[in-house]
Image (tube, rainbow, N blue to C red):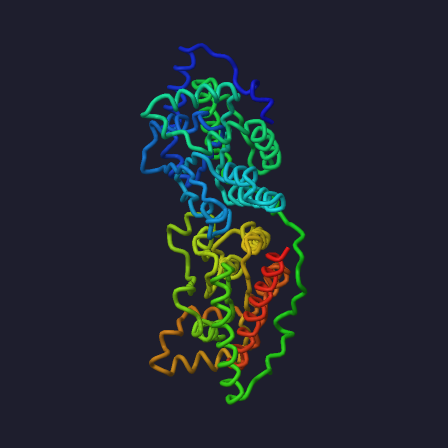
Length: 497
Protein backbone atom coordinates (compact mmCIF):
# COMPACT_ATOMS: atom_id res chain seq x y z
CA UNK A 1 0.00 0.00 0.00
CA UNK A 2 2.77 2.46 0.85
CA UNK A 3 4.23 2.14 -2.64
CA UNK A 4 1.11 3.78 -4.10
CA UNK A 5 1.63 6.99 -2.15
CA UNK A 6 2.82 9.13 -5.03
CA UNK A 7 -0.59 8.89 -6.72
CA UNK A 8 -2.62 10.07 -3.74
CA UNK A 9 -2.48 13.82 -4.37
CA UNK A 10 -2.88 15.84 -7.53
CA UNK A 11 -0.60 18.79 -8.19
CA UNK A 12 -1.73 22.29 -7.28
CA UNK A 13 -0.16 25.74 -7.12
CA UNK A 14 0.60 27.44 -3.82
CA UNK A 15 -2.16 30.04 -4.12
CA UNK A 16 -4.67 27.46 -5.32
CA UNK A 17 -3.86 25.23 -2.36
CA UNK A 18 -4.19 28.10 0.07
CA UNK A 19 -7.61 29.02 -1.32
CA UNK A 20 -8.91 25.45 -1.27
CA UNK A 21 -7.71 24.84 2.29
CA UNK A 22 -9.46 28.01 3.40
CA UNK A 23 -12.69 26.89 1.73
CA UNK A 24 -12.47 23.38 3.20
CA UNK A 25 -11.82 24.76 6.66
CA UNK A 26 -14.94 26.95 6.36
CA UNK A 27 -17.02 23.98 5.21
CA UNK A 28 -15.84 21.82 8.12
CA UNK A 29 -16.60 24.64 10.54
CA UNK A 30 -20.10 24.97 9.10
CA UNK A 31 -20.70 21.24 9.61
CA UNK A 32 -20.21 21.38 13.38
CA UNK A 33 -23.84 22.00 14.29
CA UNK A 34 -25.06 19.28 11.92
CA UNK A 35 -22.58 16.82 13.46
CA UNK A 36 -23.90 17.72 16.90
CA UNK A 37 -27.58 17.61 15.91
CA UNK A 38 -27.25 14.28 14.08
CA UNK A 39 -25.26 12.85 17.02
CA UNK A 40 -22.53 11.66 14.68
CA UNK A 41 -19.45 10.45 16.63
CA UNK A 42 -16.17 10.81 14.73
CA UNK A 43 -12.70 9.34 15.26
CA UNK A 44 -9.79 10.65 13.21
CA UNK A 45 -6.73 8.43 13.63
CA UNK A 46 -3.51 9.96 12.29
CA UNK A 47 -0.63 7.49 12.08
CA UNK A 48 2.67 7.81 10.25
CA UNK A 49 6.42 8.08 10.49
CA UNK A 50 8.24 9.98 13.22
CA UNK A 51 8.66 13.61 12.05
CA UNK A 52 6.05 13.13 9.30
CA UNK A 53 3.96 15.99 10.71
CA UNK A 54 1.09 14.19 12.46
CA UNK A 55 0.74 16.83 15.17
CA UNK A 56 0.87 19.68 12.66
CA UNK A 57 -1.80 18.02 10.51
CA UNK A 58 -4.14 17.60 13.48
CA UNK A 59 -3.54 21.23 14.42
CA UNK A 60 -4.67 22.30 10.96
CA UNK A 61 -7.77 20.11 11.14
CA UNK A 62 -8.92 21.50 14.49
CA UNK A 63 -7.95 25.13 13.91
CA UNK A 64 -11.52 26.42 13.42
CA UNK A 65 -13.52 23.71 15.25
CA UNK A 66 -15.23 24.64 18.51
CA UNK A 67 -12.98 23.09 21.20
CA UNK A 68 -16.04 22.02 23.21
CA UNK A 69 -16.80 19.40 20.58
CA UNK A 70 -13.44 17.70 20.08
CA UNK A 71 -10.60 16.12 22.00
CA UNK A 72 -7.00 15.46 20.92
CA UNK A 73 -5.04 12.58 22.41
CA UNK A 74 -1.41 11.72 21.85
CA UNK A 75 -0.82 8.06 22.56
CA UNK A 76 1.84 7.07 25.04
CA UNK A 77 2.87 3.48 24.42
CA UNK A 78 3.26 1.56 27.65
CA UNK A 79 5.87 -1.23 27.45
CA UNK A 80 4.25 -4.65 27.27
CA UNK A 81 5.93 -5.72 30.51
CA UNK A 82 4.32 -2.81 32.37
CA UNK A 83 0.81 -3.08 30.95
CA UNK A 84 -1.88 -4.21 33.41
CA UNK A 85 -4.79 -4.06 30.95
CA UNK A 86 -5.84 -5.63 27.62
CA UNK A 87 -4.41 -4.20 24.41
CA UNK A 88 -7.60 -2.38 23.36
CA UNK A 89 -8.44 -1.06 26.84
CA UNK A 90 -7.07 2.51 26.41
CA UNK A 91 -8.55 2.90 22.93
CA UNK A 92 -12.00 1.53 23.78
CA UNK A 93 -12.07 3.80 26.81
CA UNK A 94 -11.44 7.01 24.85
CA UNK A 95 -14.10 6.71 22.13
CA UNK A 96 -16.12 9.93 21.93
CA UNK A 97 -19.75 10.59 22.73
CA UNK A 98 -22.29 11.06 19.95
CA UNK A 99 -21.83 14.39 18.22
CA UNK A 100 -18.18 14.80 19.22
CA UNK A 101 -14.82 14.24 17.51
CA UNK A 102 -11.70 12.46 18.76
CA UNK A 103 -8.39 13.23 17.03
CA UNK A 104 -5.66 10.69 17.74
CA UNK A 105 -1.97 11.42 17.23
CA UNK A 106 -0.98 7.77 16.93
CA UNK A 107 -2.99 4.85 18.23
CA UNK A 108 -3.58 1.13 17.94
CA UNK A 109 -1.54 0.72 14.74
CA UNK A 110 1.67 2.21 16.10
CA UNK A 111 1.16 0.46 19.43
CA UNK A 112 0.87 -2.97 17.82
CA UNK A 113 3.64 -2.47 15.24
CA UNK A 114 6.22 -1.08 17.68
CA UNK A 115 5.70 -3.86 20.20
CA UNK A 116 5.91 -6.47 17.45
CA UNK A 117 9.14 -5.13 15.92
CA UNK A 118 10.59 -4.63 19.39
CA UNK A 119 9.78 -8.31 20.12
CA UNK A 120 7.66 -7.41 23.14
CA UNK A 121 4.91 -9.60 21.71
CA UNK A 122 5.05 -12.84 19.75
CA UNK A 123 3.97 -13.42 16.16
CA UNK A 124 0.78 -15.09 17.44
CA UNK A 125 0.00 -12.18 19.77
CA UNK A 126 0.57 -9.72 16.92
CA UNK A 127 -1.89 -11.60 14.72
CA UNK A 128 -4.41 -11.59 17.58
CA UNK A 129 -4.03 -7.82 17.83
CA UNK A 130 -4.64 -7.34 14.14
CA UNK A 131 -7.82 -9.42 14.49
CA UNK A 132 -8.91 -7.41 17.56
CA UNK A 133 -8.29 -4.13 15.72
CA UNK A 134 -10.44 -5.27 12.79
CA UNK A 135 -13.19 -6.29 15.21
CA UNK A 136 -12.95 -3.01 17.11
CA UNK A 137 -13.13 -0.89 13.96
CA UNK A 138 -16.04 -2.91 12.58
CA UNK A 139 -17.95 -2.60 15.86
CA UNK A 140 -17.42 1.17 15.83
CA UNK A 141 -18.58 1.42 12.23
CA UNK A 142 -21.66 -0.72 12.92
CA UNK A 143 -22.50 1.42 15.97
CA UNK A 144 -22.64 4.53 13.76
CA UNK A 145 -19.12 5.91 14.28
CA UNK A 146 -17.32 7.62 11.43
CA UNK A 147 -13.70 6.45 11.58
CA UNK A 148 -11.11 8.11 9.35
CA UNK A 149 -7.65 6.49 9.26
CA UNK A 150 -4.78 8.51 7.81
CA UNK A 151 -1.14 7.47 7.41
CA UNK A 152 1.41 10.24 6.75
CA UNK A 153 4.23 8.85 4.65
CA UNK A 154 7.73 10.26 4.15
CA UNK A 155 10.88 8.71 2.69
CA UNK A 156 13.87 7.72 4.80
CA UNK A 157 15.86 10.57 3.25
CA UNK A 158 13.19 13.11 4.25
CA UNK A 159 12.94 11.64 7.73
CA UNK A 160 16.73 11.97 8.11
CA UNK A 161 16.53 15.66 7.21
CA UNK A 162 13.62 16.41 9.55
CA UNK A 163 15.05 14.55 12.53
CA UNK A 164 18.38 16.30 12.06
CA UNK A 165 16.65 19.69 11.99
CA UNK A 166 14.77 18.92 15.20
CA UNK A 167 17.87 17.65 16.97
CA UNK A 168 19.91 20.63 15.86
CA UNK A 169 17.92 23.08 18.02
CA UNK A 170 17.64 22.97 21.79
CA UNK A 171 14.03 24.13 21.68
CA UNK A 172 12.96 21.16 19.50
CA UNK A 173 15.37 18.32 20.28
CA UNK A 174 13.01 17.05 23.04
CA UNK A 175 10.54 16.11 20.31
CA UNK A 176 12.82 13.32 19.07
CA UNK A 177 12.67 10.23 21.27
CA UNK A 178 14.95 7.22 21.33
CA UNK A 179 12.06 5.26 19.81
CA UNK A 180 11.98 7.72 16.90
CA UNK A 181 15.70 7.22 16.26
CA UNK A 182 15.27 3.45 16.52
CA UNK A 183 12.43 3.60 14.00
CA UNK A 184 14.67 5.58 11.64
CA UNK A 185 17.50 3.04 11.92
CA UNK A 186 15.00 0.25 11.20
CA UNK A 187 13.16 2.19 8.48
CA UNK A 188 13.00 -0.71 6.02
CA UNK A 189 11.65 -3.10 8.66
CA UNK A 190 9.00 -0.58 9.68
CA UNK A 191 8.13 0.13 6.05
CA UNK A 192 7.45 -3.53 5.37
CA UNK A 193 5.51 -4.03 8.63
CA UNK A 194 3.41 -0.87 8.19
CA UNK A 195 2.62 -1.90 4.63
CA UNK A 196 1.45 -5.38 5.62
CA UNK A 197 -0.43 -4.08 8.68
CA UNK A 198 -2.46 -1.68 6.55
CA UNK A 199 -3.20 -4.44 4.09
CA UNK A 200 -4.54 -6.61 6.92
CA UNK A 201 -6.66 -3.82 8.45
CA UNK A 202 -8.23 -2.27 5.38
CA UNK A 203 -11.66 -3.95 5.27
CA UNK A 204 -14.14 -2.39 7.71
CA UNK A 205 -12.39 1.01 7.65
CA UNK A 206 -10.12 1.98 4.75
CA UNK A 207 -6.65 3.49 5.12
CA UNK A 208 -5.79 6.77 3.41
CA UNK A 209 -2.08 7.28 2.76
CA UNK A 210 -1.08 10.92 2.36
CA UNK A 211 2.19 12.40 1.15
CA UNK A 212 3.80 13.87 4.26
CA UNK A 213 6.63 15.41 2.23
CA UNK A 214 4.20 17.92 0.72
CA UNK A 215 2.72 19.44 3.85
CA UNK A 216 0.08 21.71 2.31
CA UNK A 217 -1.09 18.96 -0.03
CA UNK A 218 -1.39 16.60 2.95
CA UNK A 219 -3.46 19.19 4.83
CA UNK A 220 -5.71 19.74 1.81
CA UNK A 221 -6.16 16.00 1.24
CA UNK A 222 -6.95 15.31 4.91
CA UNK A 223 -9.53 18.12 4.96
CA UNK A 224 -11.08 16.82 1.76
CA UNK A 225 -11.33 13.32 3.19
CA UNK A 226 -12.86 14.49 6.46
CA UNK A 227 -15.35 16.83 4.78
CA UNK A 228 -16.48 14.25 2.22
CA UNK A 229 -16.85 11.47 4.78
CA UNK A 230 -18.78 13.66 7.20
CA UNK A 231 -21.02 14.87 4.39
CA UNK A 232 -21.72 11.32 3.27
CA UNK A 233 -22.43 10.16 6.84
CA UNK A 234 -24.82 13.07 7.43
CA UNK A 235 -26.69 12.31 4.22
CA UNK A 236 -26.86 8.52 4.48
CA UNK A 237 -27.07 8.07 8.24
CA UNK A 238 -25.47 5.26 10.22
CA UNK A 239 -24.06 2.17 8.56
CA UNK A 240 -26.61 -0.58 8.02
CA UNK A 241 -25.32 -3.96 6.97
CA UNK A 242 -25.81 -7.64 7.58
CA UNK A 243 -24.70 -8.60 11.11
CA UNK A 244 -21.22 -10.12 11.04
CA UNK A 245 -21.13 -13.66 12.40
CA UNK A 246 -18.07 -15.71 13.28
CA UNK A 247 -18.13 -19.43 13.95
CA UNK A 248 -17.11 -19.41 17.62
CA UNK A 249 -16.54 -22.76 19.39
CA UNK A 250 -19.80 -22.98 21.36
CA UNK A 251 -20.74 -25.26 24.21
CA UNK A 252 -24.10 -27.04 24.06
CA UNK A 253 -26.44 -25.53 26.65
CA UNK A 254 -29.73 -26.94 27.94
CA UNK A 255 -32.98 -25.01 27.71
CA UNK A 256 -33.92 -23.39 31.00
CA UNK A 257 -37.15 -25.37 31.07
CA UNK A 258 -35.14 -28.61 31.06
CA UNK A 259 -32.96 -27.74 34.07
CA UNK A 260 -33.65 -29.77 37.23
CA UNK A 261 -34.05 -27.29 40.08
CA UNK A 262 -34.42 -29.87 42.86
CA UNK A 263 -30.75 -30.08 44.08
CA UNK A 264 -30.34 -28.96 47.70
CA UNK A 265 -27.94 -29.35 50.61
CA UNK A 266 -28.52 -29.73 54.38
CA UNK A 267 -27.69 -26.68 56.51
CA UNK A 268 -24.94 -28.45 58.49
CA UNK A 269 -23.18 -29.69 55.36
CA UNK A 270 -23.54 -26.25 53.76
CA UNK A 271 -21.74 -24.41 56.57
CA UNK A 272 -18.87 -26.88 56.64
CA UNK A 273 -18.39 -26.86 52.85
CA UNK A 274 -18.75 -23.08 52.62
CA UNK A 275 -15.95 -22.55 55.12
CA UNK A 276 -13.69 -24.99 53.26
CA UNK A 277 -14.33 -23.40 49.84
CA UNK A 278 -13.89 -19.84 51.07
CA UNK A 279 -10.58 -20.77 52.67
CA UNK A 280 -9.36 -22.21 49.35
CA UNK A 281 -10.51 -19.11 47.43
CA UNK A 282 -8.61 -16.91 49.87
CA UNK A 283 -5.43 -18.89 49.15
CA UNK A 284 -5.97 -18.65 45.42
CA UNK A 285 -6.51 -14.89 45.57
CA UNK A 286 -2.92 -14.46 46.73
CA UNK A 287 -1.65 -16.60 43.84
CA UNK A 288 -3.84 -14.75 41.34
CA UNK A 289 -2.37 -11.44 42.52
CA UNK A 290 1.25 -12.64 42.36
CA UNK A 291 0.84 -14.20 38.94
CA UNK A 292 -1.21 -11.22 37.66
CA UNK A 293 -4.14 -13.32 36.45
CA UNK A 294 -7.25 -11.16 35.91
CA UNK A 295 -10.61 -12.67 36.86
CA UNK A 296 -13.95 -11.51 35.42
CA UNK A 297 -17.09 -13.01 36.99
CA UNK A 298 -20.48 -12.23 35.48
CA UNK A 299 -23.81 -12.73 37.23
CA UNK A 300 -27.14 -12.69 35.47
CA UNK A 301 -30.39 -14.30 36.53
CA UNK A 302 -34.02 -13.90 37.43
CA UNK A 303 -35.05 -11.17 39.87
CA UNK A 304 -34.81 -12.57 43.43
CA UNK A 305 -32.75 -15.54 42.23
CA UNK A 306 -29.92 -14.80 44.68
CA UNK A 307 -27.23 -13.01 42.69
CA UNK A 308 -26.34 -10.75 45.60
CA UNK A 309 -26.05 -13.64 48.05
CA UNK A 310 -23.71 -15.48 45.70
CA UNK A 311 -21.54 -12.41 45.29
CA UNK A 312 -21.34 -11.85 49.05
CA UNK A 313 -20.12 -15.42 49.66
CA UNK A 314 -17.57 -15.01 46.88
CA UNK A 315 -16.14 -11.73 48.11
CA UNK A 316 -16.07 -12.57 51.83
CA UNK A 317 -12.68 -14.41 51.64
CA UNK A 318 -11.11 -11.95 49.16
CA UNK A 319 -8.78 -9.08 50.04
CA UNK A 320 -10.97 -5.98 49.46
CA UNK A 321 -8.03 -4.25 47.77
CA UNK A 322 -8.05 -6.88 45.05
CA UNK A 323 -11.62 -6.88 43.76
CA UNK A 324 -14.44 -4.63 42.62
CA UNK A 325 -18.14 -5.48 42.62
CA UNK A 326 -19.75 -3.61 39.75
CA UNK A 327 -23.55 -3.26 39.83
CA UNK A 328 -24.94 -2.53 36.38
CA UNK A 329 -28.10 -0.43 36.15
CA UNK A 330 -29.74 1.37 33.24
CA UNK A 331 -27.11 3.29 31.27
CA UNK A 332 -26.61 6.95 32.14
CA UNK A 333 -26.84 9.62 29.40
CA UNK A 334 -23.07 9.75 28.81
CA UNK A 335 -23.06 5.93 28.53
CA UNK A 336 -26.01 5.83 26.13
CA UNK A 337 -24.10 8.32 23.97
CA UNK A 338 -21.38 5.76 23.19
CA UNK A 339 -21.12 2.25 21.76
CA UNK A 340 -22.75 0.02 24.39
CA UNK A 341 -19.61 -1.96 25.30
CA UNK A 342 -17.77 1.24 26.26
CA UNK A 343 -19.05 1.26 29.84
CA UNK A 344 -17.84 -2.30 30.31
CA UNK A 345 -14.42 -1.79 28.70
CA UNK A 346 -13.84 1.01 31.21
CA UNK A 347 -14.51 -1.41 34.10
CA UNK A 348 -12.13 -4.18 33.03
CA UNK A 349 -9.92 -5.10 36.02
CA UNK A 350 -6.17 -4.75 36.21
CA UNK A 351 -4.22 -7.99 35.93
CA UNK A 352 -4.22 -9.81 39.26
CA UNK A 353 -7.58 -8.35 40.28
CA UNK A 354 -11.20 -9.55 40.28
CA UNK A 355 -14.09 -7.72 38.60
CA UNK A 356 -17.45 -9.10 39.68
CA UNK A 357 -20.38 -7.84 37.59
CA UNK A 358 -23.88 -7.85 39.06
CA UNK A 359 -25.60 -7.82 35.66
CA UNK A 360 -23.54 -7.30 32.55
CA UNK A 361 -23.26 -6.46 28.87
CA UNK A 362 -25.87 -9.18 28.28
CA UNK A 363 -28.54 -6.61 29.01
CA UNK A 364 -28.20 -5.83 25.30
CA UNK A 365 -29.79 -9.15 24.32
CA UNK A 366 -32.29 -9.32 27.19
CA UNK A 367 -33.73 -6.11 28.69
CA UNK A 368 -32.75 -3.83 25.79
CA UNK A 369 -34.03 -6.36 23.29
CA UNK A 370 -37.38 -7.02 24.98
CA UNK A 371 -38.09 -3.47 26.11
CA UNK A 372 -37.26 -1.97 22.71
CA UNK A 373 -34.31 0.08 23.97
CA UNK A 374 -32.26 -0.81 20.88
CA UNK A 375 -33.05 -1.72 17.28
CA UNK A 376 -33.40 -5.34 16.22
CA UNK A 377 -30.23 -5.14 14.12
CA UNK A 378 -28.34 -3.93 17.21
CA UNK A 379 -29.22 -6.80 19.54
CA UNK A 380 -28.86 -9.39 16.78
CA UNK A 381 -25.36 -8.09 16.07
CA UNK A 382 -24.51 -8.07 19.78
CA UNK A 383 -24.09 -11.84 20.18
CA UNK A 384 -21.03 -11.83 17.96
CA UNK A 385 -19.71 -8.55 19.38
CA UNK A 386 -19.96 -9.93 22.91
CA UNK A 387 -18.11 -13.11 21.92
CA UNK A 388 -15.37 -10.94 20.40
CA UNK A 389 -15.18 -8.76 23.53
CA UNK A 390 -14.86 -11.78 25.80
CA UNK A 391 -12.23 -13.33 23.54
CA UNK A 392 -10.17 -10.14 23.90
CA UNK A 393 -10.31 -10.67 27.65
CA UNK A 394 -9.38 -14.35 27.59
CA UNK A 395 -6.61 -13.83 25.00
CA UNK A 396 -5.20 -11.27 27.45
CA UNK A 397 -5.16 -14.03 30.08
CA UNK A 398 -8.36 -13.37 32.00
CA UNK A 399 -10.51 -16.05 33.57
CA UNK A 400 -14.04 -15.24 32.36
CA UNK A 401 -16.98 -17.08 33.93
CA UNK A 402 -20.67 -16.32 33.44
CA UNK A 403 -23.43 -17.50 35.77
CA UNK A 404 -27.15 -17.64 35.08
CA UNK A 405 -28.78 -17.90 38.52
CA UNK A 406 -31.92 -19.93 37.83
CA UNK A 407 -35.15 -20.40 39.79
CA UNK A 408 -38.71 -21.34 38.86
CA UNK A 409 -41.67 -18.97 38.83
CA UNK A 410 -43.15 -20.35 42.03
CA UNK A 411 -39.94 -19.74 43.96
CA UNK A 412 -39.68 -16.23 42.55
CA UNK A 413 -43.23 -15.44 43.68
CA UNK A 414 -42.48 -16.70 47.21
CA UNK A 415 -39.38 -14.51 47.40
CA UNK A 416 -41.18 -11.47 45.98
CA UNK A 417 -43.91 -11.80 48.62
CA UNK A 418 -41.33 -12.32 51.38
CA UNK A 419 -39.53 -9.14 50.33
CA UNK A 420 -42.74 -7.15 50.13
CA UNK A 421 -43.86 -8.29 53.58
CA UNK A 422 -40.50 -7.70 55.32
CA UNK A 423 -39.88 -3.98 56.02
CA UNK A 424 -36.08 -4.19 55.92
CA UNK A 425 -36.23 -5.98 52.55
CA UNK A 426 -38.88 -3.93 50.79
CA UNK A 427 -36.22 -1.86 49.00
CA UNK A 428 -35.33 -5.01 47.04
CA UNK A 429 -38.73 -5.23 45.32
CA UNK A 430 -39.97 -2.71 42.74
CA UNK A 431 -42.84 -2.33 40.32
CA UNK A 432 -40.39 -3.13 37.54
CA UNK A 433 -39.73 -6.56 39.12
CA UNK A 434 -43.45 -7.36 38.97
CA UNK A 435 -43.68 -6.12 35.37
CA UNK A 436 -40.70 -8.26 34.34
CA UNK A 437 -42.31 -11.28 35.98
CA UNK A 438 -45.29 -10.94 33.63
CA UNK A 439 -42.87 -11.27 30.70
CA UNK A 440 -41.25 -14.48 32.00
CA UNK A 441 -41.89 -16.50 28.78
CA UNK A 442 -40.32 -13.79 26.61
CA UNK A 443 -37.31 -13.47 28.90
CA UNK A 444 -36.89 -17.23 29.03
CA UNK A 445 -36.83 -17.39 25.24
CA UNK A 446 -34.24 -14.57 25.10
CA UNK A 447 -32.08 -16.23 27.76
CA UNK A 448 -32.14 -19.59 25.95
CA UNK A 449 -30.93 -17.86 22.78
CA UNK A 450 -28.27 -15.94 24.71
CA UNK A 451 -26.92 -19.11 26.34
CA UNK A 452 -26.89 -20.99 23.04
CA UNK A 453 -25.05 -18.24 21.13
CA UNK A 454 -22.54 -16.98 23.71
CA UNK A 455 -21.42 -19.94 25.82
CA UNK A 456 -17.98 -20.29 24.28
CA UNK A 457 -15.14 -22.59 25.28
CA UNK A 458 -13.08 -19.62 26.49
CA UNK A 459 -15.95 -17.85 28.32
CA UNK A 460 -18.57 -20.46 29.31
CA UNK A 461 -22.00 -20.00 30.84
CA UNK A 462 -22.94 -21.96 33.94
CA UNK A 463 -26.60 -22.42 34.87
CA UNK A 464 -26.83 -22.40 38.66
CA UNK A 465 -29.83 -24.19 40.20
CA UNK A 466 -30.91 -21.70 42.86
CA UNK A 467 -34.25 -22.84 44.29
CA UNK A 468 -31.95 -23.80 47.18
CA UNK A 469 -29.72 -20.74 47.65
CA UNK A 470 -27.19 -22.67 49.73
CA UNK A 471 -26.65 -25.25 46.98
CA UNK A 472 -26.22 -22.43 44.43
CA UNK A 473 -23.59 -20.61 46.49
CA UNK A 474 -21.44 -23.70 46.88
CA UNK A 475 -21.71 -24.56 43.18
CA UNK A 476 -20.56 -21.07 42.16
CA UNK A 477 -17.59 -21.22 44.54
CA UNK A 478 -16.53 -24.64 43.22
CA UNK A 479 -16.68 -23.47 39.60
CA UNK A 480 -14.67 -20.33 40.33
CA UNK A 481 -12.04 -22.24 42.30
CA UNK A 482 -11.64 -24.91 39.61
CA UNK A 483 -11.30 -22.32 36.82
CA UNK A 484 -8.68 -20.32 38.74
CA UNK A 485 -6.70 -23.47 39.57
CA UNK A 486 -6.73 -24.41 35.86
CA UNK A 487 -5.52 -20.92 34.91
CA UNK A 488 -2.67 -21.08 37.43
CA UNK A 489 -1.62 -24.53 36.21
CA UNK A 490 -1.68 -23.33 32.59
CA UNK A 491 0.49 -20.34 33.43
CA UNK A 492 3.01 -22.52 35.28
CA UNK A 493 3.25 -24.82 32.24
CA UNK A 494 3.80 -21.85 29.91
CA UNK A 495 6.50 -20.46 32.19
CA UNK A 496 8.34 -23.80 32.14
CA UNK A 497 8.53 -23.92 28.35
